[in-house]
Image (cartoon, rainbow, N blue to C red):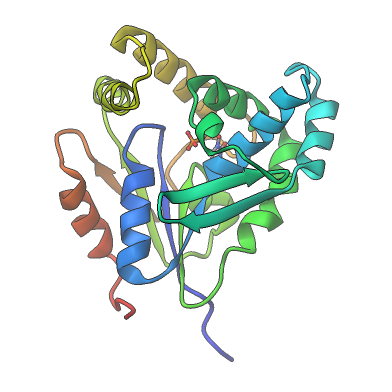
Length: 225
Ligand code: DC
């Protein structure tokens, strides 16, 4: 019997550096990359296009089943296509993140996205970035990381990212949003944000991206390529 395709799961709260670290790790390993948050965000975008009421779970569940999400590698980076439209920029908005977090608390939505996420597990390996990659989606993954950082540092990183993009926000506002989102993600009854028992916890406060990538890759004994 052949060995299962290896998976490196990288979970943690928003702003801990998961996205950047996961993309670099996947590229160095030559493995596939799953941005699971983008799937929840894509449903959020589709729900807002359809003007759905966020307090109507049945409509949101239908929307999850009906929404087609594709990922396209381009020279300008990974583009996310929602129902044939490029939704990459809309996906990154704070309002979409908040909507995604509310939608992600609905058990039927999570169940509907489970197999779509598992389908990304393809040879030679997968780096999976999210909240429940190591606990629920790939519990048998051999390599599991949980990245954290203080809420203040996460707000500051997000502030810099948005400022670079010309989006006008305040650090205080971002900090409030991050704390509210953390609380919602940690308190929901299905797949709450928490490290897997066998995850290595890395606090990235004060660490540069390269230092974090090194620590993460040190867990994977054989590097492909
Ligand atoms: O990682 P992100 O900020 O793109 O995720 C957006 C929201 O989606 C986040 O607030 C919680 C939810 N999410 C989730 O519940 N489970 C995941 N595996 C990924 C994201």
